[in-house]
Length: 559
Image (cartoon, rainbow, N blue to C red; front, top):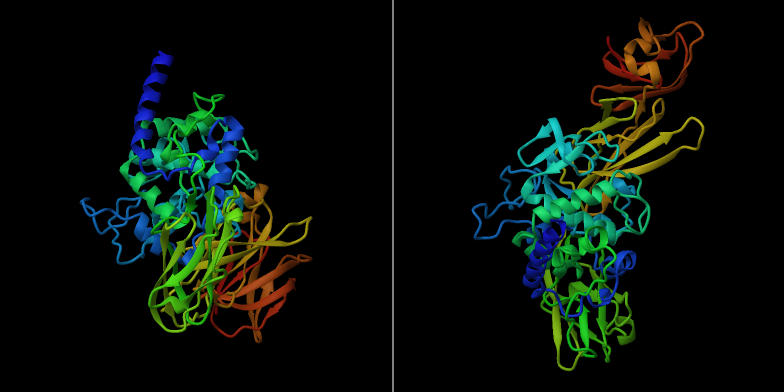
């Protein structure tokens, strides 16, 4: 029976592959021929890791308009194609949506220094509430009553043998399970060089990278939910943007060679074209470099990959179009020997607008194979330098032994791309360190805290690469042990009115460090590094929030 199933699976996979290969560029997968297991996975990594990176995080909605909208023949035409929710959100605005890393960025630490941060092969638009609910949980099948269920996204406790130790899992709708499986196959292959901080689904090795339970689940989903036309179309569009493809969409059976029934067998991608003919694999005809919104007179640079086989003459580069003066290229030609290298070579293209408005030009590559040429669209929009107002951070909520939610007020009237949350950790027996996280709404949950530790955060808004000043600092003390049981374990701290303001009341001999006083808007009013019974707080009449390490809940006063 198992062999019969395998024959059916291979027949279906072959039929799907045959229908897909018509769109695969000749020679793109030639480096995979004869490879198997870990060698095959590393060959895939080398093929897809070096790609043209999206110019900036804030440009992602412009790209999503090419990759994630319903086509004209669909009843939802004019809406974003959101795999997390069925709420109708229209493409004339990105409001209500997030730029979602379907493979959570926290799993590698969230660094913006890796191409994974803006890789469209795993970035999708997501309705904000669903995105928040799924958090950074692993994929899995939910059992029992879910904690969140909007009909498309389900979050809850994992089925037996799943989750890798995570408290919750995220289960997508059946129609998208294969999409997410092939996305995860891509990510653990393309970024096998990263170090994973969360290892629910992955391990820190080059092969197989996926943990056994995760590989089995993703293989199941990939087999049951075959490659859709949506995935085919999206793969082609991403290729025109990044000059790399998701191999697990082009060849769904690849997952079987790496993690499934065909492990140990060598892979052959089929015909790769006449041997010895010049072949320019990237850049791609009619691909586009979208520079998005850029401040006038400020350079915005992207890198364009050149990679090929048997290129004999140096490809030349020229710019054309009315707005070509707004763009520049670092070289007028590329070395053929560099283009023929397995990793190819890179050419920087810069958009530096000298006038406001939208600009377009075309980069033309010629002479790489006789009279052949191909064109790449260059587009950008120039705006005035943004004005960003101060942000007010608010006291954290939802404090547990290992997590809390940072809050802040949205700056009224400001257009922003995202918030940057700077978190500082004060370990009791180690040096203080900090890390930064990107948030798209005025809150961010940290769920990897140490019980009994102390942290703080401030927030900046970002628009077009410019940042507001840091907000006030909010301090958070995480409870531990019996302290987590309730407020009765807090340091008993109160206050009394005096002629000069208010004075803290503490038990005899007690000392509290790092007392912070905020007004109700969250603005930091006063800092007391060491407080004892009777410490004076020179405050005018009003309402205040007083926080300090060792107190699970802040002290609220009104006088």
